[in-house]
Length: 247
Image (tube, rainbow, N blue to C red; front, side, top):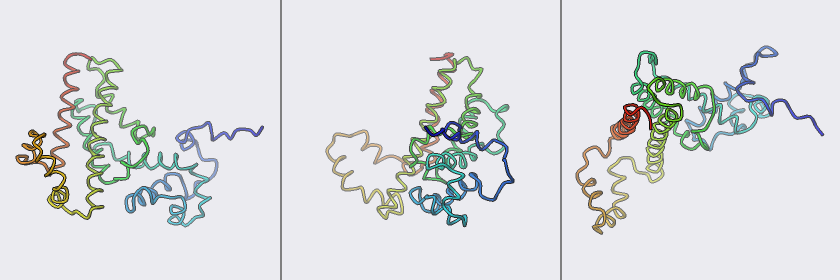
């Protein structure tokens, strides 16, 4: 029976942190990830292939495969690359309160996902275990530590905020993509495009509260305000947990 390759049981991150056995070359997993992120930003996630990455790096595809073992490792490296953006500039977790820390990370995450909309297309991006994602989670969990919450409640609160942020921004990214596909360049064009369906549904009289929103909303096109307001609702829920000392 062939001996199992050692790399199969050693994580990607452990391999990257090991001392190099030979002088480093210009081709590294981090450089491959940097190029892959650039392709995804310009052309979309589906355009990222090892062949295209290798062509941009000026190497043979097999040379890239010697550094990155398949698409799962490539996705993880790409997520880690952009997750380095999740540390708020000038933020000091020791000086900020829990609410300010979680709010700052939420805003950074939204900005990062809007810069890199392909993040919304990745398989299960919330569960990618990478050093920079773990560091971001650690900063937020540390901000919740010492507030009287047990560790299960701390994690549930952190995940609730994260789920809101990723869900809200994914919807924002998806709407932008749908507008591009339809050739709609503004919110007004989008409303005109959806008017036949919306007009019929609201005209049935079954949705009076939604109709009041459609006619009276002043901020329906303000995605940033909508995000911030929803975020405050979630943070208020966490604040309630903190005040009660747990669930």
